[in-house]
Image (cartoon, rainbow, N blue to C red):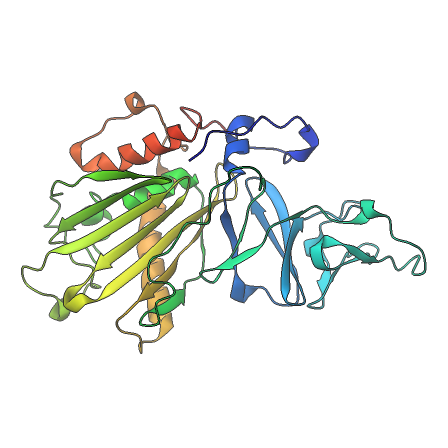
Length: 350
């Protein structure tokens, strides 16, 4: 990651009631985050929040517009308005906005020229992995949207699980996703073995935007009750790729060259709230009902959510001396080091 950009000089460009330190917010705002599933955006506008900033997402023909959720006329959220697939109309006075956030109609003065001051402040919108991504400060040498292994491989099935809201900090959630020592204590109702808590040695490797780790163990990944599909003595490989600040992918190597890839894209609604998106792809069981995948995935992440929401301090201590560590925590240590390299605070404040 590159270092932080300059501290904003325009206080009005920052969200109201920010839960982040200003300098941390400025660094985080230069990164890409998902804010919605593509499939959930129809003709009507969606209201979402990213880094404390309320946004509206709406369709304008073949394009998607993401803008501040605020009509520039009298400050009413545009997410309260109505869309038609081409534009969105403010609920207060009917001002209508189209592609690129341009105001295209003022009903009270239909024949008058529309001042540019009525145009919306917009942000980039990119569709990838079935998600809509945006960046609040797209400037300079900004990071790219993280890659997802095998997503475009025709031999793989692409799956877009429903998002999950977590009352916790995105960094804590990502750290939990890459943690390999909690399986035997947290996921015993889904896939893990409570009698198999040992974490074999593993290493991390620094990458341009984070790090990766390959973890090999005898802990399987089949749902509880599917033991007949396992392989005695099989060595499971879990390949983690972490892209700071809040995206990680996990590629799990199953028996018979089967693969499952899960992207954990934690979108920071605030320093205390996270919307977690989890697109997946796999080259096996492609004929099974998607609802079964949704249900199992939700159960796994619900197990994690209870712990993330209970952690104290709520935010992630980046100073390694503030919490204790063991050898199994190598991924956690590498993650915190990578966040420090971004220039983020030693301890997120809220």
